[in-house]
Image (cartoon, rainbow, N blue to C red):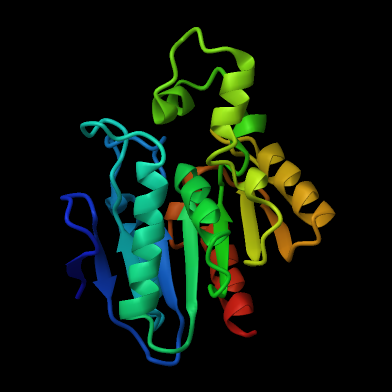
Length: 239
C-alpha cells in the first residue's frame, strides 16, 4: 500500500511512497504533462505499482505546476530537487537512489540530477532534454517561464537555458535516455541531440530508441518502453 508523504509545506509538495525490499534502490518517479496542473502524479500510478510489485521501493512525487497561483520556473525544478533529496535522506535504505521521469518531468529531473552526483542515475523516458533546441514557439515553455509574447530571441534563449539539461553540462550523474521512435509529442531528435552533447562533454550517457512505440507507451507496464526502463534500472543498480 502506498503512503502519502509531504516533502514540503505546500499542498502539491507530496508524493506516494511504496515500501520495498531493502536491497533494491529507491525509484523516484517524476511525471510529465507540459509542466501544467492539468496533469498529476497519477499518470505514473501503474508504473509505480509494477515497480513495487517487483520489489522496488517507489517514491511517486507531485510538484507545484504551472496553473497554480504564482508557479513558474524555478519553483517546479526546486520542488523536484527537494523531493529527490527527501527520498535520498528519508526513504532510500542504502541500496541507492534512481530517478525515472517522463516527458516534461524529465526536464526537471535531469536538471535536478545534474546537481546530485550521489544518485545512481537518472532515466529520461521521452524527455524534453533541451529547451533551447525545442524552440521558442512552444506555448507550454513560455508559460513555464512567464514570457511575454513579444520577448526577444536573446532573452528567450537565455531564459530557456536556466532549466535545460544540456545547459547544465558537464555533470557526473549518469543519464539513460529512452525515446519512442514514433513519438509525435517530443521528437526523438531531442534525445539524440542531448546524447551528442553529453558525449562531447565526456559524460556517462546512453540513448535507447524504442521501435514501434510513441510518447505515452512508457506509462504502460506491458510496453517495450517500460521493459527498457526496467533494463536501465537494473543496469544502473548493478554498479
